[in-house]
Image (cartoon, rainbow, N blue to C red; front, side, top):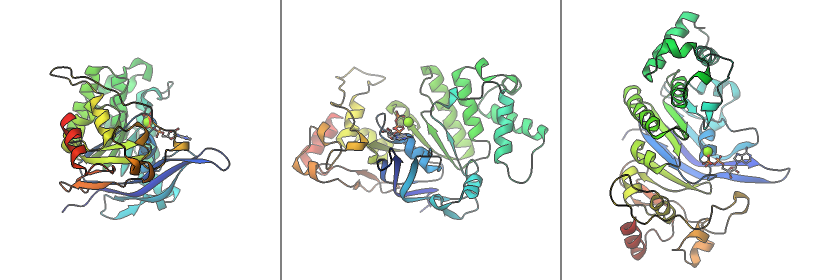
Length: 346
Ligand SMILES: Nc1ncnc2c1ncn2[C@@H]1O[C@H](COP(=O)(O)OP(=O)(O)OP(=O)(O)O)[C@@H](O)[C@H]1O
Ligand SMILES: [Mg+2]
């Protein structure tokens, strides 16, 4: 058995919203990520995807905090470390060297007065250890990274951010995140806001880079098509919890949580006849005021009385593959009549 590169256990993250109030934006999240694997984190807006992604690198905003759980990485030197316990200086050494993130919407947050070359200088200088790179070394490394994402280094390094397209900027962000050869890369909505052809080329690029460099990847998206294409593993989030996880085949072809089924049925297929699309009735609950029992029950056509009372735990349905196989947090997931109908209709 190979060992995971990242093991998350019972992780909860809270945001302080007032003097005495807080909301739990990620609750009891557990999963394993293996070397070279890619995992998609899917779910509706506000379900806690970005919060979890930021938490995995301890990059939460000031009012956000890990309240419980472990985030254990296996480092390049083979040691394991729970980053929830790291001090500031240790975290600084950890980030970008071991795990890096491409932030949601970051395409628009380049410093407009700095040329791209200077962005590389800043990133490489601020995260390097004792040995300070010379200007020539930085240019060489930036050239190498930009070629890796198929951009023309001479032109791009001299450009200001506004002179480049969205797709080019997204590629630059990926190159910057890979600058210090992290083993885990978290990408938050990497293709949102790009046209479909540019999305496609970014996806191909990520495939190719992962194959070549061997990093593991967590990408956050609400685009199920993208998830199906890029992911080995899929985790669905609802109201801060992972409510289903498994291999991409299991989750997409045999979804077992009614919410995952709803998400899949809301997406038109790329080929074939257009079936009847349906959206999920209602809207996600406010984290400050979650329904009792299973938070999805008010929107669920399969809910029974017990669903209003009990919070279902993530239960293994098919122990196939790594990270416990295919699991869903639904009291009815093991129910024969339910599964026959749900799986047949998905
Ligand atoms: N800085 C913050 N302070 C307080 N609450 C926050 C903060 N950031 C996020 N939240 C709350 O945490 C919840 C999850 O937000 P998050 O941004 O993680 O969702 P998301 O799944 O990434 O959504 P989207 O798909 O829109 O990016 C939201 O309900 C939001 O209100
Ligand atoms: Mg988000």
